[in-house]
Amino acid sequence: MRFRAGRDVWLGGVIWGSIALLIWGFSETISDGDLVGALIVGAVILLLLSIWFRTSYEMKEGRLFITSGPYYKSIPIDRITSVRKTTNPFTSPSLTIRKLEIQFGTHGVVSVGPEDRDKLIRALREVNPEIEVRK
Image (cartoon, rainbow, N blue to C red):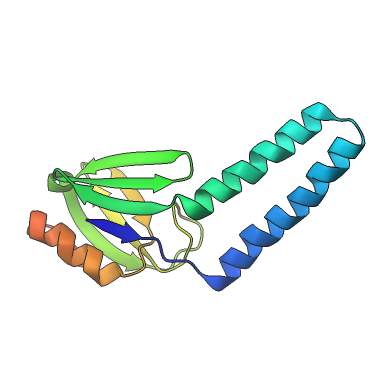
């Protein structure tokens, strides 16, 4: 089961505004003949695009797969101990501030930002009813 990433308008503006500025910078570095600069700016553009288009969460084979651009993490659902809704803007991988903080194992914590947080909580608890939903 795949869960789309939630996307905040303001964060979309930041990402797409950054991409627009970087495209301008890319064209400037090309016109100046700075191939190294163009490669670096081009790589940052590709990174931002991959984060925007490749952020998702998927449950299959008893695991939660988290993908955001080049970032990838897999968590066994039976090791998840608790889930809590949060609005911390400084955790990732997420394109929204409306997130779920997932604790797993003894000290593992990851935050995800699915479009429908309640649906992901229900799906996780179907696989592992022992997951505590904290306030």
